[in-house]
Image 1 (cartoon, rainbow, N blue to C red):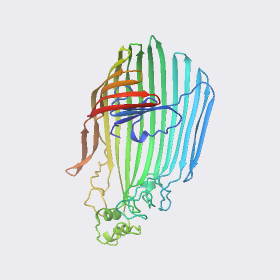
Image 2: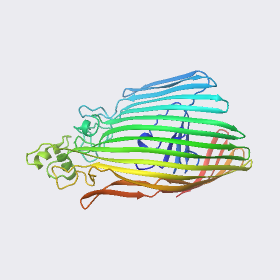
Image 3: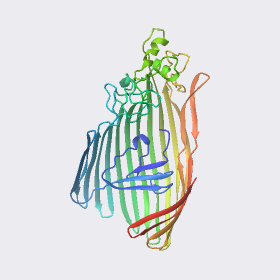
Image 4: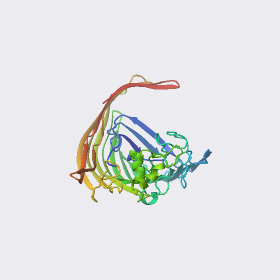
Length: 482
C-alpha cells in the first residue's frame, strides 16, 4: 500500500490503480482506450509508462435492453445485460454481469473447495441529466464482488499427489487448521468487494469554451487466504487483508477552434490503504520443512503424508505434540496528490499540428508499519519463526515525505496525405517515490527501518507513420525509452 503504479488504470476518468482495488469487471462498455508512453496531461493523474482507460456506456434516449447468457464446462454460468430508458432530458441505465464456475484443479483437502473457481458479480447504475442543451451531468454507481476459489499453488520441491510443479494435477491445500481465527476465513480463496461512485459534468460555456469536471470515490475490502507452500503441510499459510478508499476531483477548461485547441485545469487525489498479512504455521513442521533438523524425517513423503507433523513431539522429547504459531505484519499508505496542467495544440497549416503540455505535481506520501511477531516456543533464542520479521513492540512506526515534479510532453503531427500521417513525440513520465517503511532490530530493540526509494523518471522519444489503403491500415514506429 506504500507503492505507486507504473501503468495507470482509469475508470470513467478516475485513477483506480491501487492494486487490490483495481479490479473492474468489463461489461456494457462504450470504449476502452489504451495509450502507450508517459501521459502527463490527458488524464487526472499522470501515468508513468502508459494508460488504460475504461469508459462505461452512458444512458441514451429511448428504450432498449439486452440479455446474454451462456453455459460451459465445470458448471460454468454466464449472464449479462442492460436496460436503458429515458428521453433527451433524463435517462437511466442499469447493467450487470455475473459469472460462476467450479474450480478445475481438484483439491483433496477435506472441507475445501476445488481451486481456481470463479464467482463474480458486477452491477452498474447510471443516470444522465441534461437540464439544458449546454449542460450534461452523469452519475454512475458501480459495485463489483468476487468470491473466487483458492489459488492452486503447487510445490515444485515437496511431493504432491500428481507430482511436483504440476499446475493442473490434484492438490492437497488445506490451509491452516486455525484458519478462521489466525487468517480470517476457513476457506482458501478471495473475498473482495469494490464500491465506486462517479459524478461528471460537462458545460458548454460558449465561444469555443467548455468546462468538465470528474469526481470519484472508490472503496475496496479484500481478503485472500492462500496455502503458499503448495503442499499438505501446515507450513506456510498466509492471508492478505487489504482495505482502502480514495477520493478525487478534476476540473478542466477546454478551447477548440480551427487554429488552436487547448486545455488547462487542476486535479486533487487522496487515498488511504492498509495491507495486513497474517501468517499461520506449526512450529515443528516449519522447522523441519525449512531446516530439516531431524535428518531421516522428510517434510512430506512421496505418498503426500506430512511426516514433519511428528517433529514437535521429537524436538520436545515427548513433552509437546503441537505448537501453533501465528504472526502478522501490516503496512499502511496515506497519499495526497495535487497538480495543475495545461496543454495546447497549434495548427499553423491544415496538415500540421504542434502540441506542448506540462503538469506540475505536488504530493505528500505517508507510510505506517506494524508487526506482531512472537518468539517461537521450540526455538526461544530466535526472535521470530520467519527470519527477518521484527516485532514492533505494539508500536506503529510512521514516516512521511513531500515531493514535487514537472512533467512535460511535446508532439508533432504532419499529414503527408489524406491517408498517411507522420508523428514525433517526446514525453516524460514519473512513478512516485516510495516512502518504504518496515522494522529493524537495533541493539535488541525494534526500530523504524526507512528506505526512501527515489522516483522513477521515464523519457520517451518516438517517431512513426500511420496510414491506410483501402481495407488495410497500419503503423510503423521507432521509439527510444530511458
